[in-house]
Image (tube, rainbow, N blue to C red; front, side, top):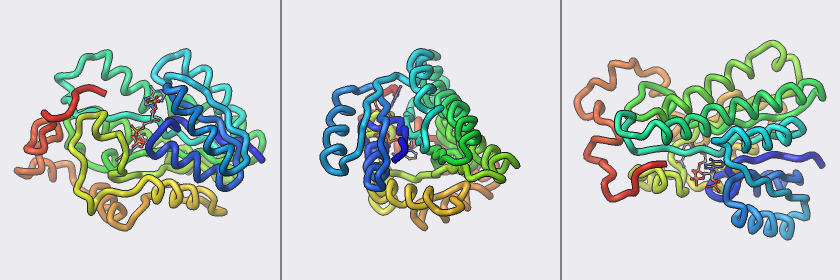
Length: 267
Ligand SMILES: NC(=O)c1ccc[n+]([C@@H]2O[C@H](COP(=O)([O-])OP(=O)(O)OC[C@H]3O[C@@H](n4cnc5c(N)ncnc54)[C@H](OP(=O)(O)O)[C@@H]3O)[C@@H](O)[C@H]2O)c1
């Protein structure tokens, strides 16, 4: 069976993507910085699904880390660009180095790995690229940070590639999973207050729904798991930018009553 490369597989949604792919018989290359967590996950997946699992420890915000993983992406049958981070600190208050690292991880890494994977897939005549994005990138930004813009880039790049003639005429698929709030370490690490339970999705549910969609004969270009977020994504997608000047909506995550003083700052 062919191999799937999953970035950000050491916890959260990425670990569930790895599990969902292993359950379909894929051998895996798991990428993240935390080598011990990856080894632990690799052991569990080998035992449960009898697949070959390789651990690739890499910091995707660095040039070296990225070049290691690009080699693996070039050979992949499935590439899941999942690694990412957010921030609850306003753009004007962050250190530039933190901002640059966030953009390197959220923008440069998925672009570089997609670039490495796509050519090989087109040459082989098959393959699937899954780019993880967010409803935060679907409409007028309200966060006061570069996170929404970084996810908008991922969704847009995916759409531009998926609708290109070369990809449309091949058996290669490029798909964006546009996610709402998923229960993971993401919000605590970013210093953002989580959404209410009604709007919180389980990572297992998200991973299974997305991996199922990815394996349709013609996968959707943009897939939003859960009907609640499908409605929200559509509203955001069509909302005029001036919506965000309405009092109450104009406050961003970094200054509003949802302020994050009880959370650690930084990404
Ligand atoms: N959770 C949500 O509500 C939500 C909503 C919309 C979209 N998303 C997107 O979903 C994706 C996964 O998020 P999550 O919720 O699973 O977050 P998470 O629990 O914080 O996991 C993030 C993953 O990315 C890896 N990672 C972080 N920095 C990295 C780096 N510099 N190099 C390599 N790997 C790195 C982490 O592993 P190491 O720390 O071991 O490196 C971890 O495996 C992200 O792209 C996020 O933007 C999440």
